[in-house]
Image 1 (cartoon, one colour):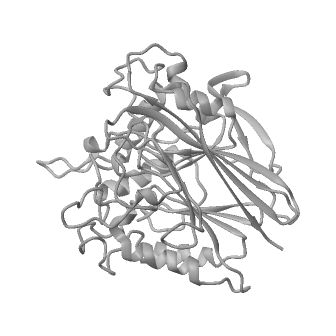
Image 2 (cartoon, helix red, strand yellow):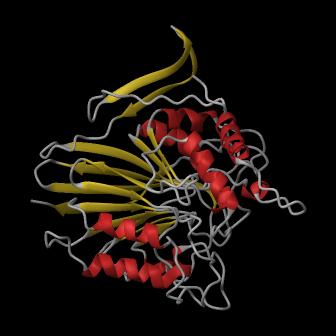
Image 3 (tube, helix red, strand yellow):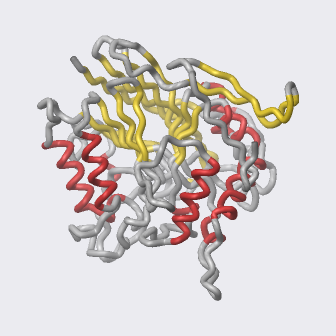
Amino acid sequence: TLDSDSIAKLVATGLTADSLYHARLATAPGVFVGDPMRFRTLPSTEPGRAFTRKIAFGSCQSNAIGDVYGSNTDYPLQLVWADQAAWAPDEIVHVGDFGYWGASLEPDPTSGVVPDYTKHIAKYVDQMAKLPTMRQAMALANGVHQRDDHEISGNNGESYENPVCTQSILAMQKVFASPDLVDTLDPPRGRYFSYNYGPQIKVIVVDGMSLDRSYTNIGDGGANPDATFFGAGQLQWIQSLLLGPECLKIIVAGKSLLGDPPSALTRNDLDKTWAYAAERETLMRFVTETTTPEGKPINCEWWGADRHALGYVSAATNPLGRVSSIMSAGFSMHGLASAPGEEKYDWTYGFDLNQQWMMQWMQITLEDDGLGHITRRAQARQTDCSDLTAPLGSSWAIGDGAVAVDMWTYA
């Protein structure tokens, strides 16, 4: 049954944990529409159950029409998605900039009228209709989606009390399935939620574009302790989950973790965590210095994006605290110059002063052996695309970069 926005949504119940299901929309028995769908249910929360999850992680997808590629949507805009489909992930975690259309959704400069959520839905639908390889790959895995600045603004948009963010949240709740939001206001001020992989891994999906994030020009260099990236309510929620009984907590964010606070002369990209250095330090110190009610250390990872590069830093070498971090973006985007502080990653791929186009993503495997050991393997997948007119071939192949492996133990 379609709702008033012509969207069909079905809540399936009675499914078996950690099992692969296939589905397809039908208008009548045997009359199918759309792409075949596939999804794997979450692992059992019963102790001692082993499982492995394959997760494709990234962000930043160039628009299907009107960019440097023109309208030839099969070449080479969708190479990352074909690469992901071949790997067959269980989840595709896309943390924002699904498209670069936010400027068209800002308030009308004359009337001040804000386009409603249906205009946001239309942008998502258009992107998926015109990028069939992307759409088909997404249909073959569970989706975890968040939004970012280019979906609500031209670039680095302010989210504090921004009505465009409200419309964006309403649209995403229509277009993308998700667990229940923590924010139960109508409409919500933030789109953040959590879920578990078994009893020992908690995934915390945060919202860096909530209506509670303060203006990014507060303070100098992010040093103002009153400037907030999350908002007080979301920050308290994150900290409460970090104290939970799970062995590993994974914070999934639209923004990467490392980067020096901007100076008065370099106040760019002020939507990043580095513009809220005081709150970032508070959270990292909380992870590093706090123990759980059981007296155990907090094991935490930060998976962030929006930097058109791949990177990794271990908990042991992270200058901010005892938190390992993965950076991934650039599903289809040009490279960026690295920012001060990003040299502190153990390794990176994709930073480029010449802004060559590239396709990249992080291939992540999470494994719990059920016997007290969790392993996370992150494999960089990327290619640089300096010549957009070159024929498809070896120069367009998406290959392996560095690998990061971390392990955690629980009793």
